[in-house]
Length: 422
Ligand SMILES: Nc1ncnc2c1ncn2[C@@H]1O[C@H](COP(=O)(O)OP(=O)(O)OP(=O)(O)O)[C@@H](O)[C@H]1O
Image (cartoon, rainbow, N blue to C red; front, side, top):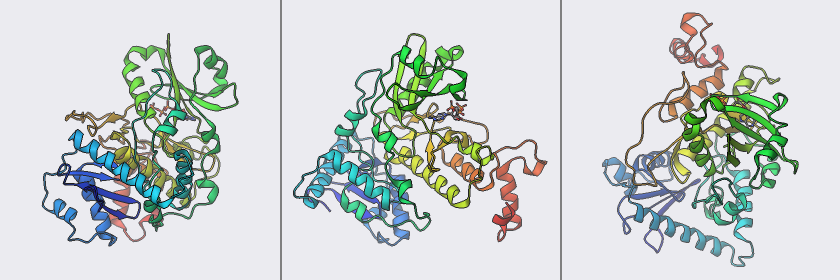
């Protein structure tokens, strides 16, 4: 427990903090405010692995179904987050009295440490990131102003246990992405966009979705990026979705999420510039359209990457973000087969950092995956990864058309050899 009223438990990668001196019922995991349900989930996990005793004070909150956990109490949350950051800063200072490294260096080193030893969730302490103007995001500004998702105190990382499920990673797969680390914000005029995409040449088109067409673009400085161009015929209707996608992506910096680099909102163009993820979609790999079929370890790693991305969006980003369109064609793969979740066009923000109490539960997304909370969609995605099949395959015999039903059928008829029959 801290001297400033924060009580903390450190278990593996999670640092669970609360303060009843500030305001009863404000809980944080790794510096992000969470609802009591999320707190209880984390506690259950850590009771099961023996890190937190079943008689702990926090556990009793969950058991009594206490109504504490009013994480909408803004001042208390802000104060607690501030105290948490101060405590983290003190710990960092204590660990490194020479304090010779800049916060940026510490971030890079922490990223390296986490990348090497972390098979579980990354602690996240986020500070609000500001776009420099309405048209461009500044990555440099973000890196100096904010403590990013990997900038956790050494004391937390030291205790990160190896996940028993995680396949031992090769160092290259966890090293920071050299291409991306070189990328700053991308400022483009419409004419530069036209040059980079050779006037939206068909030969540079990499795909098309409901939102628009995606092009591979070569910038003057040699960077390769993806440019998503909103369809003109849906222009007015897409305006809200376009800005929602940009606003959401702009807040996100995680290796398993496609990084927004900039956008253009001028004249008759709405363009989003993101990192280019070169190895196609998970769906293409499952369909065998990308050469070698995925082996089991690769599938497992991809599933874990997606879980990390969703956990980050749900629990650790500054505002809770529900993706709402989790599906295999929205998972992009890197050359080293790491997964990155793309397409936040349907995302919505939760109420965590606002006074807003109403969350729209309107379901959006893609048939076969529909779910307001991503969890069901993630389950369906796991079945896809395991079976290679799409959620709905109408050309199959009737009992096999809905993959979930087919798997349930197989599972209930032969639990022991279920996996072999897939
Ligand atoms: N950042 C990127 N890097 C490389 N390829 C990309 C990138 N983003 C999208 N693509 C490619 O473009 C295709 C279309 O992407 P987009 O996100 O527009 O649509 P979608 O997700 O397939 O469909 P929908 O918009 O209906 O959900 C993807 O399937 C993928 O092949």
